[in-house]
Image (tube, rainbow, N blue to C red; front, side, top):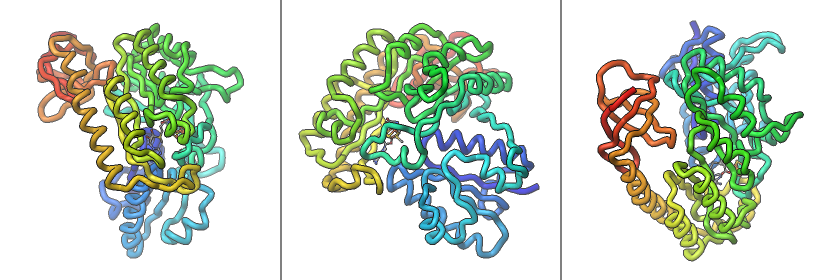
Length: 421
Ligand code: SAM
Ligand code: SF4
């Protein structure tokens, strides 16, 4: 039996695609091995959203060059590092056997031995711990934010047909999945490219009645495309979790304009107020970039102020990293690395305080928890609002939805006692 080694960096989409690829390779008779030295087939699934991610991929590739020298093994680079830049990649990494564009799992499978052009391995996202599964519903992005390389590497938006997604979710549920996380770079614009123009709200309505499916999540939303129908779907459909990822990126209008995000600070705040009025229990997470060109201290302060006022449950913060080929790469990268780092830390410290305050509000309350596993002898799972909850209890609880009374809270998780099934 041949061994495969699969290494992944990047976003949930990359992780979801790697899981699907692993399933395809196993269907072809491969088995996973822990070290590349033991593998006949090696795949690196790459990310280029920030320079740091790209550097990690290059370092990994370099280490594999020596490994390839002494033995027969196929080495594939897939993911966002692969573009129309094939010649450049071939010159830079001559020891790589093939370069495959992001998401093109079938090509990798053909390289692994799948024969015949119309011969396809059916790919169903394997569930994570058989309980929660990523389901990509759209590829690519049409937004072209000034700093972002995704539209160049993953192409224009392409939605999967509603029936195909529903079928996949039914198969997953039949295999024990309780929760699906619908993925897209911009899920709110799902369906606009399909013949009947279904939207995400419609897709959620079609998924809701699937027996055995307990929870539905979706990410990532775009503030410009988040609409009333979607907000109503979250309020109306019991399985759709009250958890929305709504990237802000900056709280300063000039920076938002330069980023090409398509909304102002005021419009964003208004949208958040509207969501919170419609879905009072909603947990909001966001993404922020610090150190974008032209972000002086005052403009950065506008972001800090908005974060203080809005109080997000989670903030993912990244230091701006110029990406060759994007519009922002033509602007001077004028915020020094140390200042970027200091701003990132200020956002992280603020978020630690905010998350502590938000989570303390759960003390004494009973929360519904979908049990996903055990860590350090304790069961852990997530609430509909994506809070991680730890508790001790005997018996087999994996995959069950239980009630936990919260006794301790911290910025990153909650702890409590089991009070019911
Ligand atoms: N589509 C989502 C949105 O509208 O924000 C997010 C997708 S993007 C691939 C994931 C996150 O990476 C972004 O929210 C942004 O914060 C970060 N990101 C993208 N390009 C970046 C860059 N050039 N420098 C730093 N962070 C970046
Ligand atoms: Fe990138 Fe903007 Fe598309 Fe998000 S919406 S993937 S940040 S271009």
